[in-house]
Length: 252
Length: 183
View (cartoon, rainbow over the protein chains, first blue to last red):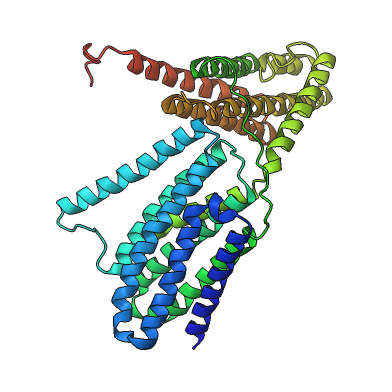
């Protein structure tokens, strides 16, 4: 009964998000994010219907739709990357390289596992497989957040809300699925409640962050300084060399 | 248990990064730039008052040896106190200068289409090295004799210089040229 109430509350917040998005024209600004919310809404309704009328089909359909949600969630990360770094091609290049590193490491891991005979490595169950894919998502998000922090890229309130909600959702998924895999059956009952409750919290974060209709203005990127990148690096190196010489002078 | 921590590690790292991300305000950058300008202006004012090149030999043993030869206990104490203050001021200014160089570089490089990732990483390494050196010296000044960090700074500088030279040698080396016999 409690689980169903939480699920219906989730449906309510998803509808609220979509309606608010439509009325404040945020649907057109974040089309992938709202498509993801719409997909999760349909998934929730479909799973609730299954649970009510065909409970035996619930488990296999849950994991199948979860895989689709995972793919559409990855597109949300791409949308954040695209919008946040639109005016910052240098940072975008850095983030692309970091993401490339994450995917290269993932592919290397899969190849090594395949070489050892287990295609999905430590994935014995579907939950394990989802955990592994969520870890890849966590690493991708980490690369993106590191690039944003390193280059101090200003991010609008809406985008920050989307990123925070999705980031926390990925963190909680990794933690919950890891514990599910480690503790097994005793944790499964708790997980049945924990997962929808935590998702409800992330839906609330998104609702609060995306409630304000006026788009917060992000400061414009600075004008392109004269000279090429090599000139910029040379100047920075010269400045750093002066600092190093200061150390020499002080220690002499 | 170790495997569980291995799986949890990316999530924990992401959580930490998200925390810093949320702490960062959009206006922070502007406030920081204004603060840096104020600091730089203050530093320029102090420079006008201070003896030019006051930082020369700030960690030098020679002055200390002179004072020990010439003065009494009170003079030694006064010298150490003054030197500690002077070194602290110089380090604070150096830290502010490094932060300003880094900020200016990032502001200019983030809008560049032709950004070179490897050069950026090398520069990031240099910034981290210099900041770490400053922090190390600041701690050294507080907990040790104010002249002791000088030896440490020289040693770290030599180490970094040798490392840079080795890296440059390898990056400019002709691939056809055989390496040292030990390789």
